[in-house]
Image (cartoon, rainbow over the protein chains, first blue to last red):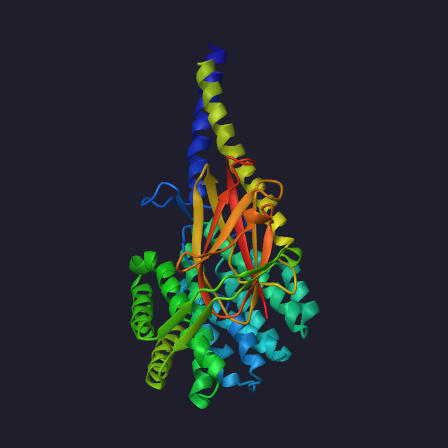
Length: 303
Length: 141
């Protein structure tokens, strides 16, 4: 009889533990555990197609824009960036996540132009927002130490920061907060497009930059698809998406010509050269409208 | 009653152990992958993870900019060579299949023009029947 009671107590304890463990899975943890197993949704339209982290779409890194701008030998212009004093305006997670993306893109731009004192200040805001969003694990003491040690070494710093953003992306996706990850992505993309359009407003002869703007047609489509599941999360989310969808209509008018060509493979170097060619046909009017629309979207993000 | 408590205890242990095992497996795969994404390659800031079983295929769409060189890294399981990944253009022309190169865990791609691509990944059924697939993308200018 005593043994039975013990077993009943053990069973009750175990059931309690199951319920407790189940609840814990749903929590949005803010600790240092960055690699919880991902929730993976199987696409119901086909039996064999699986989404990577619940998404079928990816957006290129905003840092590539910074590299391109530097390659064009354009002068550094701090006016392109979101001023640091605005950071106190962002009080909810929606704004913090978007501006973590914005400031991250700005940090990339500052870093490429070796603006070390400014980069240190922007990095401190990035750290602050990461902490407030519960992703300080991605910007942990080791990362901060490495950033401090590599200030002024632009390639090393870019590697460390992009690594931290990847860790944040992983953490958010693994902890059922993919909408925050999507907002960081959106902020970075909007800021990089804003920087490019600001450059072309001054100098439209920068063909590489103009083309790179036109090439945002598919990244924008992908970004919209990444954000779309969260349209009904809030009025702010809906407004952001509506703005991006409106911008996408403008991009639809851009001609994107593509010609396939056989790739060349160099197995010894583990390198494939993709010889296919693409060409962008974008008018001055389209460029102007895109510049105006991205300015409106960005202003709402950074206000 | 003893049987009931043993069953419940078994369930509890399963709940505790399986996520830890999955986490450990995912951590190991990420560590395998990241060793191939070192400077001069810079991460695109995203990590692509999918749990695959049997002949399931995971895919995502992305854009590669012209004039850049990218590295795609793909890993699954506790050793290299378990993941087959393919790169297609938007017209579904096959641009690369690491299956032709012993399921190499990484490959570099030099893009002459900006191309929208589809990346597909599946487990090599000879080596694995299920597990996490992790993919990373890095670029160098």
